Length: 196
Ligand code: SF4
Image (cartoon, rainbow, N blue to C red; front, side, top):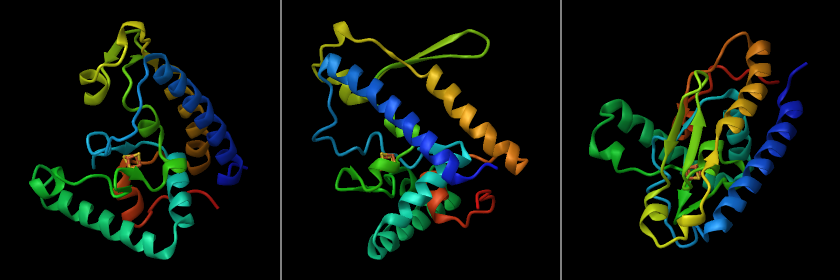
């Protein structure tokens, strides 16, 4: 039977592989996030698309002390409300992710795939074979990194592997989850938690 306790170790191992690829790519060009406040990457639009990553992020949230939990919850609810009021308004657009404290992610070990891969240029091969290329973050593109020797991270394999993990949850639950931002994942009652 599928459960969080079965799939979380798989997810952690997968994250370790992903982090190793990212580390190798960043070392190749001398890229580092040290000193960056993350406000360009840690936007309110960072979105999770799978049950498993939402579950894992909530699990991380439960490890925070109660005072930090309350602060995060307050931030998440304010962000969700601002989005409901006006998704294009300044209150929403000027917010940063509720988990960013002084430029650092307070759930770094639990952060989702999209955060782990941010910053470095990448390619994605779509199912129809078309390859989509994307550049790095503004720091990567503007600073003087040795991008002449840079290889783009191929995210295709990571997306496929995540889908392989997620399909087990979807089969057990009989449904797919709707995508949610970090604030929606933590700040809104979880209507489709499918793990025991
Ligand atoms: S989860 Fe962490 S790394 Fe990802 S956007 Fe939020 S603060 Fe940044």
